[in-house]
Image (cartoon, rainbow, N blue to C red; front, side, top):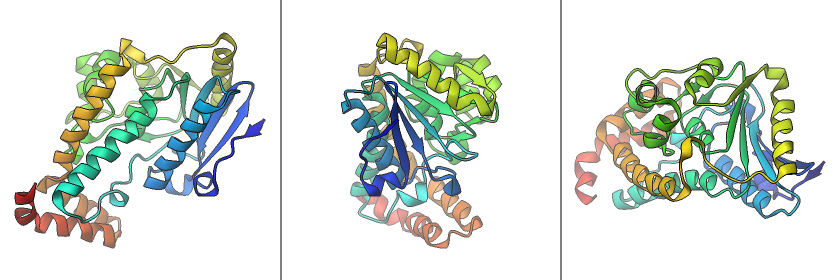
Length: 281
């Protein structure tokens, strides 16, 4: 097994190894529930690029350590006070680039979900070739509860995987959070195994891909060009939702309840001053 030569700034957030044609990228911040800070996202984006460029890599696995697969994007760490137009452009750019990192992976991609997955970590997983999960996994996309719109191409892709009614159960006000078994039955993921067998089974599938030169493809019959276009549109809509008064106030309250005073103050400041700066959008 060989390590890819990642720089130290990235290696503290993910580890990457190669064995038998398979690159396994492991998110490694279990104390933070593998939440997607800017540093974490930069880490796996860089790992994807290196794996794609590595001649010995024929298939890629993305997984994580600890009890959570990922708590999703850390909003408090990505939104800062800045001129309104610049902030909107920043949100669009960051969201679009995040999902393009998954969409543009050239080698077959398998996501192995080892525990609860939330938000962008769910939608991005469905942009792989295949999703396998341990029995303890759950899948949550609480966009409606947060007052934001679907992202990660889920506005069209979820319906293709699960049907329109089930997709709306997850994306809408109900906020359905399926277990791994329920997610497989619905069509969101493709396989469930006992937690202790997840790593071995994921590697077995990816190794078989490497041997037969499996191609990169998308679930539900989706095509790359369309998904890129949808991602761009969703990213613009998401930026508008993030800049709404309701979202900023709710985020401030949530962060304050978690005793995260500084980021909470940022959102409260943006909310309070919105009547002024919204004129500049």
